[in-house]
Length: 193
Image 1: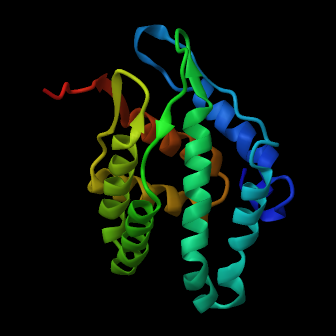
Image 2: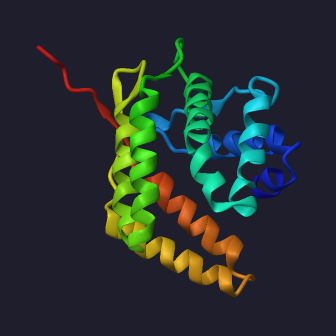
């Protein structure tokens, strides 16, 4: 997926394939199988623009700041597309991401600013993921993210350290991703009276 992002043009195909693989490996309660039905051609232009805009920081630092609102819009479109194309056994209607642009922009800005604190980004990122989970609707189940900032921080540090040595990247990357996915839970949605 990263290579597809770097090369820009293949990014719709590599990202969609990655999402398909990721969702196929998610374990749902009662042995239900999740699948991802999105196609690369659905929003190919968003993937390519997102990949292209990732180069902005290498041109000028201030340019990266200027395009943050656009990249957040791309992420919002991708999230809505992702959840709408997420299905599992017995599902007849799609999920919907109901989060608003301004909320996502605020959380993204907070996470970006928190990166300057060296460790604060982990708490901001886990809070943003919880916000995203709260805005996934269309099921009687509530998606939750239970990892703490500390969990995110030390595992990210170990993974980053392993990248220095290059060879363990596939194993530590799998370890990190497996942990991250295991932090998402489905529970009964609280009824509102």
